[in-house]
Length: 163
Image (cartoon, rainbow, N blue to C red; front, side, top):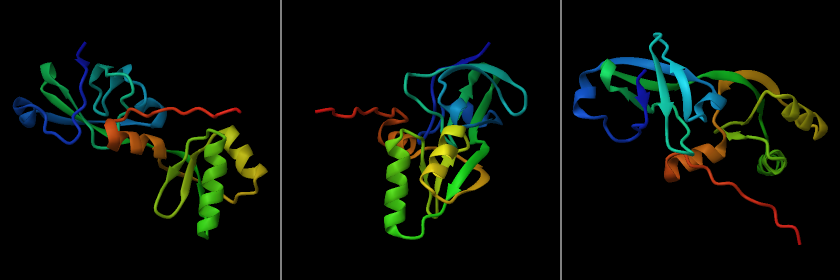
């Protein structure tokens, strides 16, 4: 089985890979966080991932399966999400704060806050009386995007100080 241990983001894959067959790998948020897993491309080619700790796959990343002469482009799958559309800057801040303070993943889009469609998030939104609609969209939380831009997907944790 072919093992992939490198992600090509901004840089070009090696010369021989530029003429390789192209394929795609469509994954949801949870799957894109797993750097060690067996995968099957959208065209059915099997391979294994063995990526460095902390790497999260993002839309457009490329994986090179050299022995198979294939370049696989990562696609973010549409997932069930809750879409929140704050109307004022204060609503944006208040809603994002409360969701993040409860350690729930949150994606900040140009026009909305987006949360995964899971029971804990739905209960939180209802408890805080935050209006939302269910939808299907690509989902990547804000911390993963910041980590991706800063150091290739390595998100950093935090701790709450208790005095």
